[in-house]
Length: 124
Image (cartoon, rainbow, N blue to C red):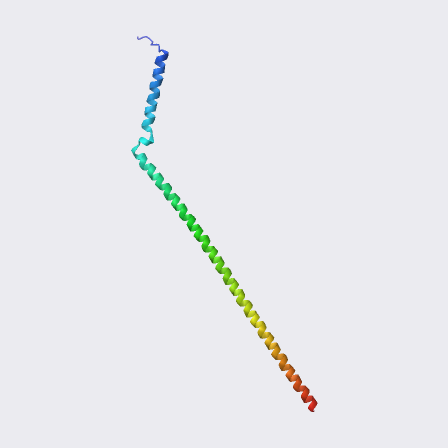
């Protein structure tokens, strides 16, 4: 049977350095930058991010356009309501003017009839 080989301090340091070097070589081999498909995946991620940003910009633009359309529609509704109100007021004023005219005509007619009646009373 072979005898036990006692390791010295320097031997242990060399063994640890070799193990570290092997681990570093393994890590470098697994580094994604060395993977030929990594560049393609990275480019796809960048493209997807650009497309996502573009969609977000389009959504914001659509949202703003919709808000502007709603604001314009609201302004149009208000203008129509104001126009209807003005037309209604004009119609009411015209009706009031016509009513006053008719009242004045009736008062004049009544005064005329009353004067005729008075004249006829005096003649008899």
